[in-house]
Amino acid sequence: MPALKEWGAAIAALLAGRQTVLLRKGGIGEKRFTLGRSRFLLYPTVAHSHAESTRADHHDLLAVGARDVRLAPDGAPAAVTVRAVAEVTAAIAVARPDDVAALEPFHVWTTDSVRRNRIDFRPRHQLTAIVLSVRPITTPIELPVLPEYGGCRSWVDLRTGWDTLGGVPVGDPVVEPSALQRIADDVRSAVG
Image (cartoon, rainbow, N blue to C red; front, side, top):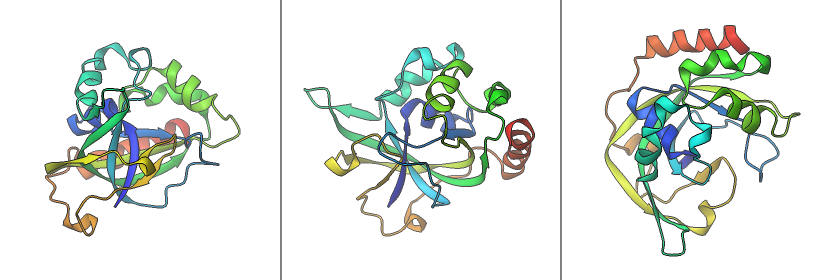
C-alpha cells in the first residue's frame, strides 16, 4: 500500500482543511522526488516537526500530529496511526522559488523554513508543489513501525491489511474539488 511520509502536523492540517499543498523535493536517501502515484496514504512522522518551522497560528497542530506517532521507551517510533488518503489534484514544478511566500495561504510552514528546508536544501533539485485532495479514513488504522519504513525518504509501502486503496473506507473530501482546482491555478500563477 503506497504511502507518502509527511509531518504529522501537516497531515492534521490537511485533514482540517488548513493546508492543501505539500512542497516536496525528496528525502536525503533519494536522488530526487518523484510522484509516481496519484493516490496514496499519508504516513505521519514527527522527526522534523519543529515549532520554529510552523507558523504560530498553526502550532496547535504540532501536538495533534504528534499523537499519531507512538514512541518506544528509547524514543524511536513504535507505531503510527494512518488517518488519510490523498489524491493528487495537481503537481506543479516550482520554477520561481523566489515567489514561494505567495503559497503561505496553502500550507502551515513559515516562508523562512520553506526556503531553508525545501529550496536551499539541495538547490539543484526541483521543488514540487502538490495540490492534494484529502479524505479521512473512517476507521484509522494503527500500524507498527517496521524497519523498512525508516529513513529520510518520501515513499514507503505499508503492510496495512487492505488489498488496494479502493478498499480503504474513506469519508468525503475535506476540500471541494472545484476549490482545489482554483488553488492549483493560484499556485501555477504564483510559482509555476
